Length: 151
Length: 142
Image 1 (cartoon, rainbow over the protein chains, first blue to last red):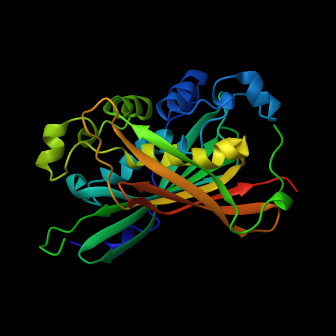
Image 2: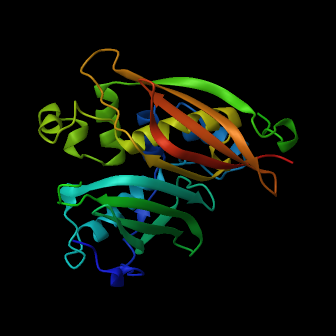
């Protein structure tokens, strides 16, 4: 069943503050097998001109995934989560995320379209520092596979 | 380490390619670090029940790994200003010590104003492209 286009632009309340810690950055980089010094060594990050450890370019997924749950589990949108797959992902880094950042995520429904019996919904998450600075804008395309035989 | 200058590169410039391995342990580690505990990434029984050949790598593990071809070359991951990918094929990860591998190459496909470059990345697993439209925009030095 096609998702109602009226949900485009729907915006959810900002998430609670997420505190970006050095150990979380180190853990995430280690899980990517990435030993770049600026993820582990504060002096190495400072030598690149940053105030503290910087997070890998895809780190924002950690903070936005939880926020995206607001859309996936929105009863009015009625997505069947068991049929949802992650189709595309885009990160815009207005600046890197740093250890010590206190950030909030605000999720909105950016677009909805249907093709070949599938619903495609783009979820946009804006990640702000607590001083209001826009840090990242993250777009996730979720594909809800149709129930019909064509899927 | 000095940032690469836009004057040192041109459209078609190839970055050093790399090969990356994924084992089951890597999937578990990424699940824990990212908070993505979707069962198809760690439970073979359930993965097969939903029609997958085996447990599959997280798309975001793949995306987070392949950008290393760009960030290792740049020396400064903070200069990646935009990064996008389309998840086209899953990567099954067998229950073996060596796991499975992807081959990643990248080249500059466009030069922009303000010393920025667009890099298109290719990620191949078993001779099949697993990520499509994988593109990073980076800030280089003047």
